[in-house]
Image (cartoon, rainbow over all chains, first blue to last red; front, top):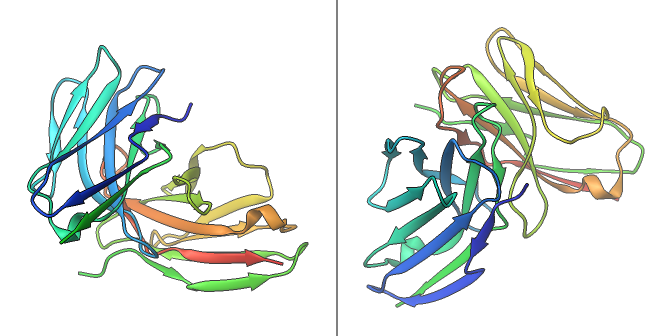
Length: 111
Length: 113
C-alpha cells in the first residue's frame, strides 16, 4: 500500500523550517527519502533503517518511529535549492530495493 | 565517476508498438531497478535485476519485460503499448543485492499516441 505524505504542498521563505511526514499502514523495515526537481531524476537524501541506523548524504535530518510506522523529514534553515518534490519510499523488509513511494510533497522556497 | 545513464531521453510511439529503453548503472553497481512515474505521482516499481535475473516484480503486466547484461546494464521492453503507458521511466542502480541506497538516472520520457 502506498504511504501517505503530508502536507501535500508547503511554501517557505528562505531560512524557515519545514517538516514532511510519511506514514504507512504496514510494518516498515526502512524509509527512503528522495528529492526530485522538475524534469530531473529523484536524488537520494537519506535512508532510515529499523533499529535506528541512518544513512544520509546531505545536511537533512529525519526520524523513524517504528511503532507508529511513521517517518518525518526535517528541513532546517531552508535554502532556495531545497525546492522540489519530496518523496518517501518504503521497504517492507521482504524485498531489498522494492520501494513503494508516496504521492510526494511539493516544497517551494521563496527568497 | 559517471552516474546512472539512460537512453533515449524522449520517445514517441504509437499504440500497439513496442519500445526498448536502456540503462547503464553507476560504476560499481550491479543491481538495477526500473520504475514508472506518471505525471504528478511517485515512482512505481516495475522490476529489479540482479545477476542477470529478475529478482522482484511489481504489479505490472507481462507486456513489461526486461533484461540485464553481463556488464550490469539493463533494458526495459514494453509490448503492445497503451496510451496509459505514457510516463517517465526511471532506472535506479545500487551496489550489491543487499544495498539500500538507490541512485536514479535522468529517465526516459515515453509518449504513446
